[in-house]
Length: 124
Image (tube, rainbow, N blue to C red):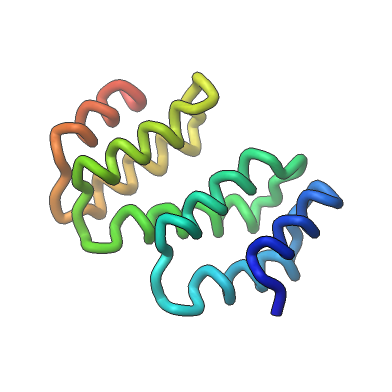
């Protein structure tokens, strides 16, 4: 099984993520049952840098981000700040990012004022 670094190099070399890479990512990211911050950051970087994002990777990516943010069921100030940095990094908020925010808000047991402010700014 490749490491995250090896997988990243392979993906960036050909510019796309297909079924085999998604399977390997699934094993690596979900292997311990937790999507930690390092793994979430890895996925964010990969998502930004890959040339052609497949629908399968798009689905995997947003599920993993949700799992990371909702690890304890709530969205606190730290998660909200991280989401703000990730979502607003490129200066625009995509429809898929808005959908993520709606899903997070709907699934979280609790949200903090910082998340609610991000939600209001991005989803309007």
